[in-house]
Amino acid sequence: VASELEGAAFGEQHIAKGIGRLTKHVFEDGKGTFITTDKGVKLLDMTSGIGVVNLGHCHPKVSAAAAAQCGKITHAQVNIGFSSAQIALLKELIPILPHKSLDTVFLWNSGAEAVEAAVKLARGATKKPNIIVMQGSYHGRTNATASMTRSKSIYGEGHGPLMGGVFATAFPYYSQFGGATPDTPTEELVNQALLQVKLTLQQQTSPSDTAAIILEPVLGEGGYVPAPPAFLHGLRKICDENDILLIADEVQSGMGRTGHMFFVEESGVRPDILIFAKGIANGFPLSGIASRKDLMDLQKPGSMGGTYAGNAVACAAAKAVIEVFREENILDNVAARSEQIFSFLKNLKASGTKAGNLIEDIRGRGLMVGVQFANPELQPDSSNTASREARAQPQIAPKIVQECVKRDMLLLNTSVFDVLRFIPPLTISEDEMTQACNIFKESLEAVAN
Ligand code: PMP
Image (cartoon, rainbow, N blue to C red; front, side, top):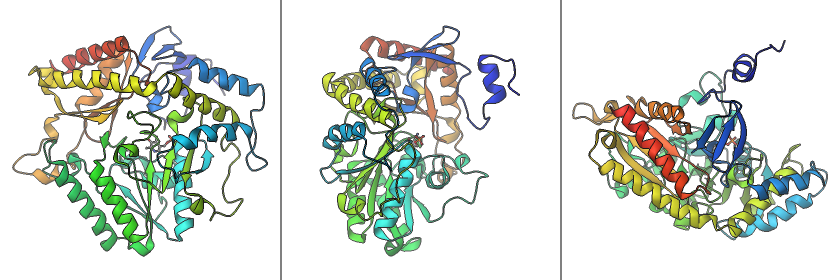
C-alpha cells in the first residue's frame, strides 16, 4: 500500500533499495548546468546525470525536437516498419562515426543493452564463444554485462551464475599494477598490459575460441584512465593477427565528452564494433552499435530488435543533439573548459598546500576528468608493493563528494581506487567552471584540514 509519505521519504519507503544514491535530493527541474530540487535548492551539476546531458539539462532545441516528435508518432516500432525519425537520425549519425566502415547501425535503449547487442553480433559473426574484457571495466548491470564488468565486484556479487565465456586482462592503469605509480612510464604499462592480453590468449581463451576484445577507450567507472594510443594500436594488431573483433564501448567517452566525437579518433584505431549511448540523445533513452555491413548482414532477420528499440522520440532528440554540436561549436567549448579545469587542478596539486598534497594524479581528456587521491592506504611501500590493489579502499574521494554536496554541487567518485570524476555538461560556461573549481577547492580543504 502506498504510504502518505512525501518526496525523499516516499522514495526511501517505496523505491528499490538496490539503487545506491549519492544524495537525498529530489530533482524537479533542470536547465543547463543546474538542477533545482523540490525544495528549491539549486545544484551545480558536475555529473551530467553520469555523462548523459552533454548539452546541459533540457537543451531547448533537443526538448523542442522531442516535443515535436510527440505530436507526430511516438512509437514507430522497428520490427513492424522503418521509422522516419530513425532514418533521419542515421543520416546525421553515420557521417560522424569514427570510421567510414562503421556504416550499419542497430539502435536500442540503454548502454547495457547495446553492449549485449555487440557481444551477440561478435559471437554470431565469428561463431566463437568467448569475450576478453579489461580489468576495471564497466559495461552494465544486466546479467551478461555484469559478467563483463570488472570495476567493482559488487555489480556481480550474489547474483550468479553470470554469463560465461568472459576473461579479464589488464588495462594500462598504474593502480592495477603492484609497485607502479603515476610516474611509471606509459610505455612500460602498455607493454605489460599487451603482454597480459597475449598471455590471456595463450593461457585462458585461445584465439579460435575468442570472438572479441572489448574495452572502454577511456576506462570509465574503473578510474577515468584514457587508453594510450600505443595500447589501442597493440590491441588492433593482436585482433588482426588472431581474427578477433575489437569492440569499443564509447557509452561514456563518446558524443564529444573527450573533445572528440568519439575517443578512438585520437589514436585513429578502427574498432569493428562501436557502442554508443548516454550523450547520444541528451537524456532520452537511446543506445546502439555501429559496425561493418558485412558483419551486420550475417544476422538473421528477427534475431535483433526490441519493443522500444530506437524509439522515435529519442531518435528525434538525438538528431537535434548532433545538429547542436555543429551549430554551437560544442567541441570548441570542451577544449576551452578542459584547459581551464586541467590548469586549475594542476596548480592546486603543485600549490604545496595540505589540500593540494592530497592529489596524486590528474588525468582524462576533454571534460572527462579524473582526480586520484594520495590515499595513505594505497601507497606502494617497500614491505609490500604488490598488494596495492588488494588494500584499495577509497577514503578521500567519498568525503570530498559529500563536502561538495553540502556546498550544493553534485560530483561523483568512482572505482575501488580513490578517484573523483568531473563530467559536467559540455556546454558549461567559464563562470560555472570557475564556481565548480572554487567549491572543489573548499571541499578539498575541508577534508585536508
Ligand atoms: N558502458 C559504459 C562504458 C558505461 O559507462 C555504462 C554506464 N555507466 C554502460 C556501459 C551501461 O549503460 P546503461 O547504464 O545505460 O545501461
